[in-house]
Image (cartoon, rainbow, N blue to C red; front, side, top):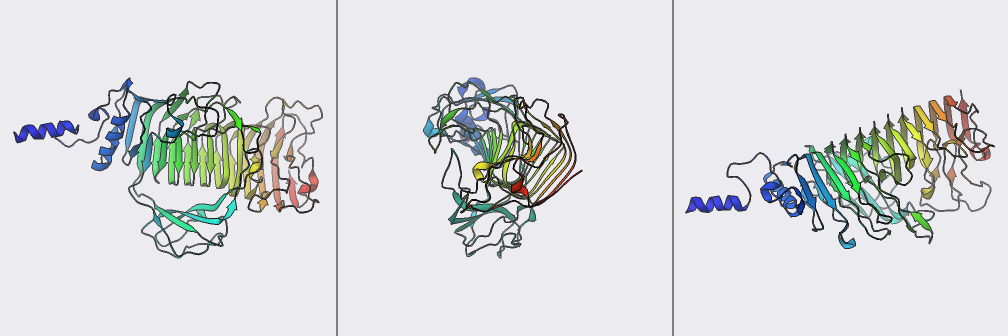
Length: 506
């Protein structure tokens, strides 16, 4: 009788009596027929895997359907999705449940509060505390607002914050150095960094798009990564069923408060552009992403691309980030690289960027090498955040392909009238080095086109009273820039603004 009861118990919990080396979704009742909602079984599988410390493997050739069951599969062990397919049907998901990601990769290590630190200084080397190990630390001053957005999506800003890595002795890693002074620290939270990498690989995912009204009700419904030291390999994501309306997406891969992340050999899909009424009462296009990162340090994207044409302006784009440091993209083909709220240190190598190009604000060093950019500006400093870059830009061996119909071409563009308080002093780069740049401006349509300019039209009148500071001075070195039009490189149509730069063109 005891033997029968034991066998029944093993069957009930879907475990073989012998210890398995990994778990499958079928062990917990998944059908994999593309029709049955397998999400409850997927959730249960990962819960058991986390408890047993076992990896999870999907069965090749199976198709797992995920409907409107509310929940999230918590992932704390390695996952091999193989060549299995996953259908994520958002067509019936309610707006209330839209934020529940399908998978959440998280750490078993709990975050903790760091107390007793009243202030911090820019580039401070040590926080004056010992830690149990290497941690990703978030510091916040709720009494100062920054990134006070300007324009159609204007807002009142967010609390001053940033993320950095500190070691056991409290030393701040230079790659994540503090950007600002913190006259007051209202909170500090440390997120321990796992020593062992967690690997998520494979899987062919298809999202059936939501049919919600076109409003800023962002959908998650993807893979959230809230753990450091993670590698995502060989994953593919497609989007089907988009209508003439829909709500935007945060990202199928969403990295949040994480360090040391690698996304390799993955394929993504850009979403359609939908319009709504912004906070200024005007019609705006809603940003919707398939990949994004928030509060991350040390993230590398390599050999990744997208299914949609990078120059098709019906689709918004792929990559966006906020409050990140030390981002790198290598051999990626994306419609955009977009850093909203202050990236520090970026490296783009052997990449191609489409109609939205390279857009950012932030600080540190931005390095672009062996890249092709399809836009009328090589680099765009986002005007809604002050067109600010406090640091240097380095461009080597790149090509700028200007789209048909463009009327101007620049190596750096943005806009800052000096009339808006963004919550911080705004800067143009203190150093801008460009070497070996080819500009294909053969399709510029303006008959009065004067040739490519170093600076675009920033529309700032430096003589108006009451301006917020906009620091424009430094050194510019340009060597071997060739334009298809044959026209020489100029400084700007408004050169007076850039009088404090030392410019050398060879």
